[in-house]
Length: 298
Image 1: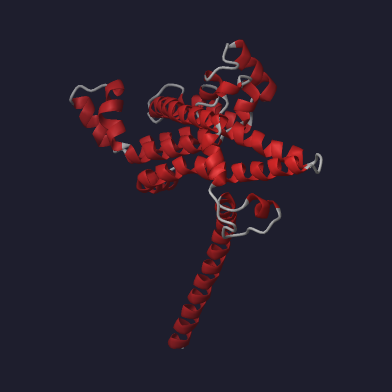
Image 2: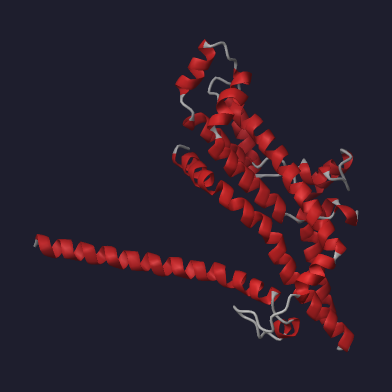
């Protein structure tokens, strides 16, 4: 009887593992196929891409699309702006998040629970787009770089994750030892807390950097000056241009413009993804550790 029970359990485990493997393979396929298509289309003949002949592998291999991207001044200007917004915005967001999360992690902070309730409230209710727009305009940030750096500088979710990390992952004995050595709460942050918080800092950097790099809606609302537009707005304009021209005439010149717009779109997507792909391997080990600590001990 024991042998049959063990055999049945082993068979059940194998079925479960096979089910998980099949599900994981399906998820990987759903995620990977669009990425492979974009990569293949960026190296393919634009005519074949428009006609739907390209799927996972390049056809009519050409680098003309990348050549046009490198020659397009608007794309490089947007790329430069996005790099600035990402670096500056991430630095500001991480600094403000740490400065807010550290005192909130102190259980003896007066009014701590009330402050946390007010912060959590913003996760479910916001002022709305129009009041936020009016506020940004009244503060003089409209059509400036600050409109993309300040209004969404702190994410409530990231703040809670950082607070949980500071509260549960740094031993209380460390704080007590520092106080015996004459270190106050303000001095503990740069001397003790930050050196022990590389994992959560890497998580915050990755979350904020990816979010800012991919964002376009705030720029669409707050920026009129095309010289300040990020890369995502440029890509959006290229996409809309291609869709608009497809509804136009059947003129040969117009058809060529549609094809080249498609080619530039895919190649620009590939180029715009490279910085985030380069960033991730450097913070991966800290990223996994930081997320698990914040999730388990929260």
